Length: 406
Image (cartoon, rainbow, N blue to C red; front, side, top):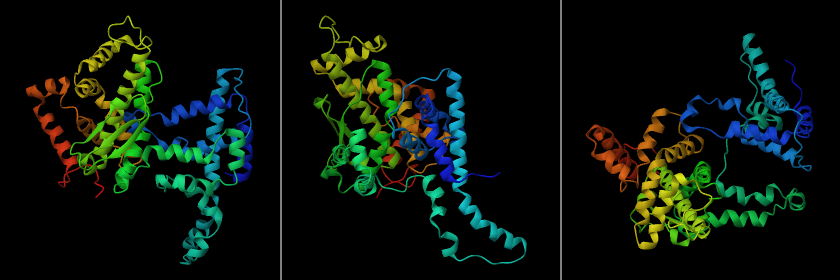
């Protein structure tokens, strides 16, 4: 097969993104390649999907001109355009491997002829083209803070264009990024900070869940802190809602494993969204509604909002929310699983997901669901397994599934 050069292929990609309806094709690819069911991840062929660098390349070419929202003449045109996009991106990947293949070919030929002649490391690894493929198609080899630290240096020649064409300003981006994590409480916990930030990044399914339930914007604005003097796992200060809601991680989380801290982080972000929903939607509710049920919310969840209304009468908001969160512990586990296999270095495994579902009970043992589950004599083995997993992930006893920072 004769492959074109990467430059030739890139020129065709630039023309491809100008095709009528390409923005819709790109959306189809994003949905297919980046929205996964965690319980089916073991069946996913990630090599058949575009990675984030390939998507960034397409978007980069797309935004160089005004994006057309014109629809194609027929829906089948989108399918055809999607297939063409995947085919050309696959060809681009193959073409970037040509320099490496050319390095190996003489070595193989020498071996066939019985000659043990190998090039020097300088000759073999030299040449700028050799590193394009492993860099562009590999995972991230970068810490979160480096995205901010090198922003100006990496994109200094693009800054003017970004300002004028996209209203993208470096100082604003740095300010937003620092809001979440730039407080002194994290200075002694850089490893834990990375874990929490990763957990925050995989929480979009939780946000989508709330949008489905309440049919509106439910994105809570949160800020993370640590307090080693707080012995429990974490606490979310809902009284600040709907302004920025502080989430403070305690000693149990800080000394726990990475999957425990991720579980706690997603659990607490769940709390933050619930506080946000109650504060925002109760202000928009019908005064004649005794339970302050938001008029645009799903009536199936009327009992939840009714329970929230009892906050005003001094009831335990934590227990009320936990009774709701307990119904979604599997979604929390899926979020942790997503972090584990994409950012935590864990292998895809059904056993891992099942263990994370048990770990998701952490912080939920004050719920009616747990009480009913615990007293059932047929559940005693699983109850014991749940307690063991939580204990092993909280204190490093040598039996944990997860990894510890210290």
